[in-house]
Image (cartoon, rainbow, N blue to C red; front, side, top):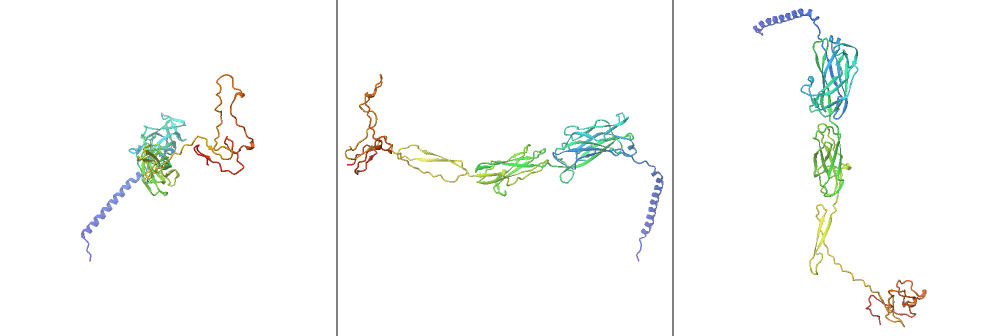
Length: 472
């Protein structure tokens, strides 16, 4: 048989009494407060929510239309009267959700410019002194940065801005994305930031003013880029340094940290890199980059490949195609030149001579140079004496040399003065011309050809020099 602890029997009645007492007190309190609950005044508030309206996603360098909405969400009883909006401030990029972006302003992400267009419900209903106007007066706006690079923009109305219950004043402007924010508010792709606005609201039915804040999250993406390259030169003899040039386009607000990596390959698949053929160089503000010089080791076809690394505001681009014709370099064989010098140029018989050669324009030549010496004998001078002809035949002198043409030795010299000589006094010898039928038609010689006798004779002989004697 299980026995109970006597202390348990004592505590149980005590606990039950305590619970019953507390429940009774609670019932009394509800009974006393019940008549007053229905007559307590409801909480009433004034407010105009300043809500920025940016695109969900923007890209660095993109220009778009932004909007600031001022929404009157005042509740009764203050909603029975229009409220006045003042001290409107806009923070295009804010890292916190605090009022007036305290501790989170990031300047330089966006620029704000006109035209600034106010909506139809942006108007003045009261004069500056608070007197109700007979008709609403439209209000225009200007948006200016408080200081260059501050990231705080003041939205200034041209007159008092009054909004009745439920009215929405819209202010349109032009915004440009200048760079990517440095602080990312989310782990989602891209860089997340938020636009924030604040304003002050006053109501004639409330003794105090209210400062309201609104935010609009958005994502900022890097600008897209492209890279084009040209190999210099496109063809060169082996041993000539070559390099590559790159132009990166689409850069927006480059930070100066972007680089281009160049690699020279010796195969068509761009898998075998040339030793020492890779270099990484920074990109200029204009997007230009030039690789280091590389000397291909052998003849053949080489291919450059270039890649842009990107930076905080710009996406990477490349690599360029391996088969890009603009990135191909054809290396041809070198064409050396050989210059020789014989030493000495002139020497007496029996003197040793030699030759030296200088090879230039080659690339790592390993061949040999062969020297050969040749002797040349000068030809004998040609004689200027007319040839002598020898004739043999009956009744003809042998040898006979034809006398030269010209004046006879007995011809007197021409007179140096007075009247010219007459034909009767001329003693010039003239040779009688034979009939045309007996003259040779083929011999160009000015002497007449010898007549052939009717009987057989030995052939006539011709001597190259006058010292030759006729045959017997």
